[in-house]
Image 1 (cartoon, rainbow, N blue to C red):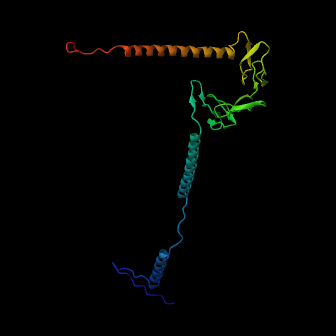
Image 2: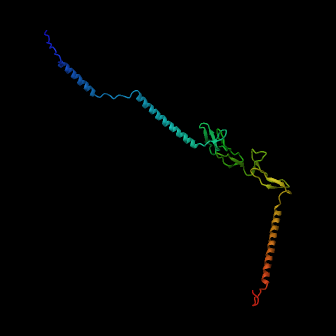
Image 3: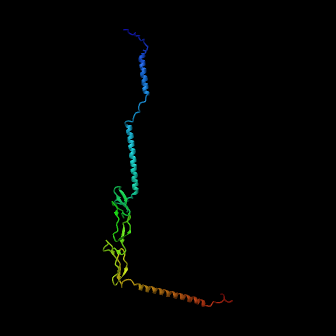
Amino acid sequence: MALEAVTPRQPGQRTLPDRTGQRGQRAAASSSSRAGCTQGPRPRLRGPWALIFTVLGVLLLVKAASAMSVRKDEIHQQSSAPLEQSPQQKLCPPGFYMEEAIRGCAPCTDGIDYTSHSNTLPSCLLCTTCKSGEEEKSRCTPTKDTECQCKPGTFRGEDAPEFCQKCSTGCPDGKIMVIDCTPWSNINCVDQESGPPSRLMIAIIVIGLVITAVLIGCMVWCCLKGKEADRRQRPVPRCSKQTAC
């Protein structure tokens, strides 16, 4: 077996690399450079970035929902009546009642219920329905109840205000009617002696007053005519040369 001759290195002389080792180093360098130029898959969002975007999205959704709820509250407050302040508590005006669900005043329904005064009622009062024998004088509104009255020919007496009674057809003997029947009272009769004067007596008084007025007018006219006649009968003084007119 032959041994390679080893050339001793002189001081200051560099060692030349082996051709085989140099080629290997070049190949490794070229492969590493090609590997560096090749583009791999893009890195995904991980960790804090994904959490930040998620939180921002949730905040935007919450803000939009709160804006919608505030808008609904404003619309509802515009449709409801303002509360009247009192020393003790807040009151709703006539035509409204206190709605606990919205903590404000809600309107009554026309023709169905009403409130006629400032209140804190949990609901409006139902309108009154006229009974049989009654007629509607005025309809129910949000601020006023229905007004009923007895039909013509009937009245509501003080002794029995629950129902209407028939009016009397006439007065007893010796009495005369001074007030006709109304929905609130029966006919009113008084004694004939203490009653008002009869129609004949009224006619006689009126005729006497007319005759008296005519006589007074005739007397005044005659007086005026007599004075005018006296003025015409007086002679007119003539002027002369000696007297001035």
